[in-house]
Amino acid sequence: DQQVKQNSPSLSVQEGRISILNCDYTNSMFDYFLWYKKYPAEGPTFLISISSIKDKNEDGRFTVFLNKSAKHLSLHIVPSQPGDSAVYFCAASADFGNEKLTFGTGTRLTIIP
Amino acid sequence: DAGVIQSPRHEVTEMGQEVTLRCKPISGHNSLFWYRQTMMRGLELLIYFNNNVPIDDSGMPEDRFSAKMPNASFSTLKIQPSEPRDSAVYFCASSLWGASTDTQYFGPGTRLTVL
Image (cartoon, rainbow over all chains, first blue to last red; front, side, top):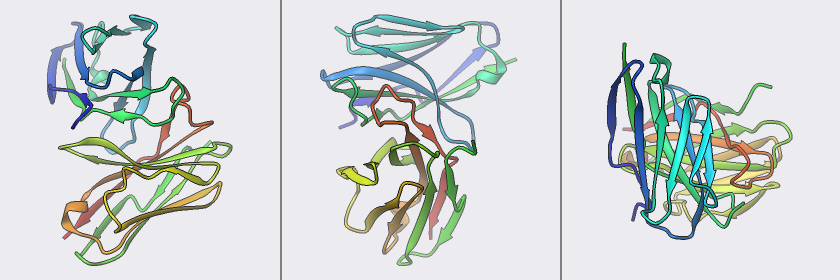
């Protein structure tokens, strides 16, 4: 009953190219979405978020796209850099402002120099 | 600020033993969260507190798990008795007010291995 799904456990991308990480959700009550990044032996750190009233949010090299009808969001990183190699978690919450986050299983991104 | 502090960083124990994980949230933060990370299920929320009061413990797997927050600067997650399937990385996180729009700051985690 995984409500937030990241179907690609791993992804390898050449340095300088675009990385696209995908996330699907099943709960139509989710209205706020986040991406967290995690390096080995460290806790996850917040990367970027988007509310359901938007379909795109951009922060430097990172852009999150939200397709509500498809219950799908994606994280684009361009250009990809070696320091982007990490595990990326997608998360969602219902009732805008509700503190409870539901996370996906993560995608390990490897940037090839 | 030192960030969220967790101890121990690693814990190896035998099945049946009691395990206590500790967390010190960021000073001034009012919400505290306990998560468990496994390969199969990713990051799962176990329980969270707001102003030291447990708000939602629906993620706690079973009665063997318990969590307390006796004051604003300290929380524990206890497993008694521990089982091999409890092996995972346990994270503590804190946020200012607990809303999803507030950034959750995670500690480095405790890697628990139950033999």
